[in-house]
Amino acid sequence: MMLDDVAFVAAPDTAEARRTLVQSGDVLLSITADLGRTGVVPDGIGRAFINQHLPILRVQNIHPPFLSAYLASPEGQKQVMGRNKHAVKARLNF
Image 1: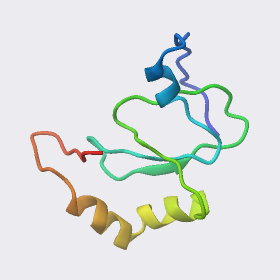
Image 2: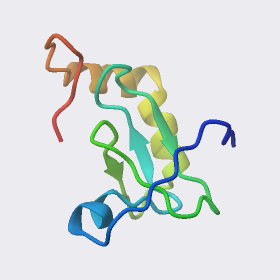
Image 3: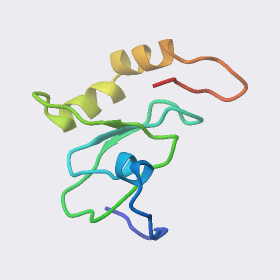
């Protein structure tokens, strides 16, 4: 895990902060710009938050690394790109 360029924030205890707080095993998916990039939040990351460009895919009964690998596969990328809204900037709606 590379943590060379980390930004630390003191998030207030609000609904927005709780909604954007990631947990170990969460799958993240880029929904703007570099559309379709994916990864799994590792164990031991500590308190970490995402922004509006990365929805949290919190799954049960699916192994998170499998979901991330599927989303990164040609078939998964085909499905992701098929939902692109083709605006000035690539984006998905969640």
